[in-house]
Image (cartoon, rainbow, N blue to C red):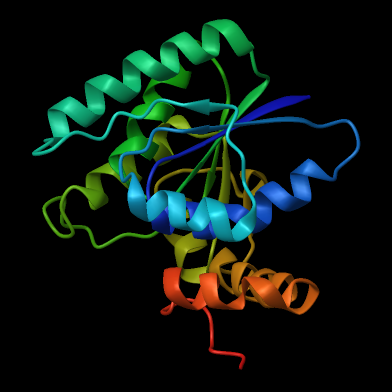
Length: 206
């Protein structure tokens, strides 16, 4: 099975990292990684820490970019990627504009979408904005939903998602924390770089 994982911001990368590690080691999985670089420098920090090398980098970040630019750029870039890679499934995370637009691009190509951190809701499409609408659109498109909590699962069930298509996984940011600590234990020389780049994620282990 060929899976394309798509993300574009630092929070997405942190929460996607442990999933990529497991998928990359799973037999029978051909994993491809695409970053849209909706955030450039902050995204690169996480890629460096977790040793993630994207197969595709859309490099779309521009000064003063707006949501329309990000949405249309992701749609165009992911359309080209899907035509070339021909994946069996797309994997997205969270509620960013990258997540929503990548899901929509996959829908247009009839590629199934799995959504990590699915089911978060405020019931107000303008708060948080645009995240609430992004997560709702993604949920409509996705056929597999990885909910972080039982509450998120209940939200999805209330919206008509079939229970067999929902798995409560917890928040993958916890897995990312443990993975990052393991990286430091294996490679203490990376400590200074990690402390400088992700002080909010990792403890100072000196």
